[in-house]
Every structure is written in structure tokens, then in C-alpha cells.
Length: 332
Image (cartoon, rainbow, N blue to C red):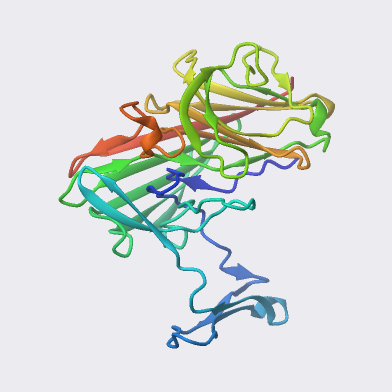
């Protein structure tokens, strides 16, 4: 069986607001040889230019990717404010429908280099850790941040921990999450079940923009009520939603993905008290479900929220916050 576990993310996905994600490093070696990228900076403001070619010498010099710059396309930005500070961020995502609004998503450290990577033995398994010196994220940020990521593997669990520390001289907002896709081994999404221990869900404008309206509504009696101990069938229902008012049991908020046909189940335990929301993405045509334990509601700086506490943490210089999630597998 395969568990898709791709990304540890510092995440605040929003419109006209801040996005600070972190993604696992891209593949750097194929077939025992390092991937090579030829790159150059575009200089023309009027004509398109090639900017990079990425190749795999270990696979017959296969071309993996070619990029080009088209003046006037891409590199769109948006600006938001936090406590009097202006932030300009890449507007890198947009819906497909006419009139869809651009927003910043999965943004500032996708290409960050993880340094001081170490692998150590621990009782019953191994652990890897590394640090990302985010700095001011190429001028997009007004303070400086270091991010330490640790993943531990044992027979009973996979633990993922992210510690974000403000190493700058200004206070900064922070939200931490991840973006893992959990495979449904049977491939039969209709009978797979999901348990989310939550009392409310954030209303969104539609499933193209997926912008919150500022309303948090009860799940009881709706398709969003998935609190049954045995889970609720996914059936053919589309989800891209944010649950809140979470039920903590044994100091954890535990989401379960259950695939009865495959005799497979996984528990995703959020262990940090700062976790205030669960984002779920589950398209009916796919045999996976994304489960994201996160500090914050979607678009946490959006004006629609008014004075609502959207889960952001403020880090003063020198302060840190820790996000911790644990995976456990079981036979349902």
C-alpha cells in the first residue's frame, strides 16, 4: 500500500493576503546522477525568452522541464497589510471560471534550500531534520524566519514537526500546516470513509474561488457532519472545505481516513494546541483525500472575517511556535 505524504507546509492560503508555505525539496538525483539545470535571467521587456532547461543525465539526458518568460504574463502580485505593514506577494493561483480572483497560494519558500540535514537513529527507527533560513523571503517579508523541520519514522507512527522562529527584529504573523495527499488503496473512493471531529465549517463563495464568506456554520444535519466514530462515506461528494471548533480527545484532534475495501485506515493526529482548523480537499474523480491540520482559517487576513480570531499566531522577535502531527495506520 502507498501513503502519499508529500509536503510539509507553513500555510496561509488566501486572497489578497499572506501565503507562507514550505514544500519538500525537489528531486535532485535520478539514476545515480545529479539533475542539472541550465538557467539565465530574462533581459527583454518586449519579447519572450527561454530561462531554464532541466535535464537528467542519469536517464539518457532526458529533458525534465523547459521554462520561458513571456513579458506581461505571470509575475502578478497582490498586496495585503498586517499591523501597518504592507506585503507584496506572488498572485500565483486563480480559479477557472470567468471573474475568478487571483490569490497567493503555496508561495514563498517552495524553492527554499534545507540546510544542515541530518539523519539519526532513534529507538525503533530513524529521524531526519533540517533547517530553512527563510530570511525575509526575497524582500516579500518584513521580519526574518528560520524553519526547522523534523520527520521521525518508527513502527507505530510517523511524526512530523515544524518549528518556526522569528529571527528578525519585527513581530510577524505565523500559521503552520502541511498538504499531504492520503491514498485510497482500493481505488474505490465511493466507499471510503472520513471522520472529522468538528462542529463547524467555513462557508465559501464557490468551489472555484473557494474564498470564505466570513460565516462559520454548524455541520450538524449537513453533508459536512463527519463526526461519526466510524466515519462518513465520501461517496461522490466534492470537498474543499475548512472545519473548525475541533473536538480534542486524549490531547489530540484526530482525523481518520478509512478504506474498508482495502482493510486500511490511517489516523492523522494533530498534537499542537494552536491547530484550530482542518482543511480537506477530496475531488470525486481521484482516489485520494488531502487532510491539512492547520493553525488558521482560509484567507485569515480577509476583511470578511472582521474581528474573528482566524487562528494566526503572532511571533515577537526571538519567539517560536511548534506544529506537530502524528500518523498511525490501522486495520478498520
